[in-house]
Amino acid sequence: MLRQDIATAIDATPDQIQSEIKISAATSLELLNTYLPADEPVARITSASPAKDRPANSVLAITKHRLIFVAPAPQVVGWRLASITKSQAAVGYFFIHGDAGEYSLGLTTGPWADSFERLVKRASAIAVLEDQ
Image (tube, rainbow, N blue to C red; front, side, top):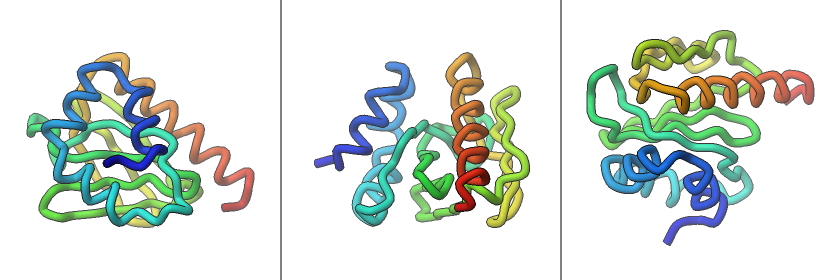
């Protein structure tokens, strides 16, 4: 059973992304659902992959304090939102740079990728303003 915050975040994504999260990224979703502390709710989520042109078997989640990438290996990388100095969705990549390093993840192309990029930038800006 999914936590309510995660279920709500999934419901806020387009149908294709919901399907990728629930089916292709099920292992990563379960890891996030089981081990993310309850006091760090997920605000937004998307499907992702460790590299461009790979299956979307991972999730990328925005919480109040972090951007968290969860892959089924298991591999988890978390950036404090206030530390993010670069986030960009372009041609199937999601470039991210912050305190956890610089990564080029895979992200479905199209309007949702652009929307998710804006969500990350907004969350990061708010974290800086709130001194998180």
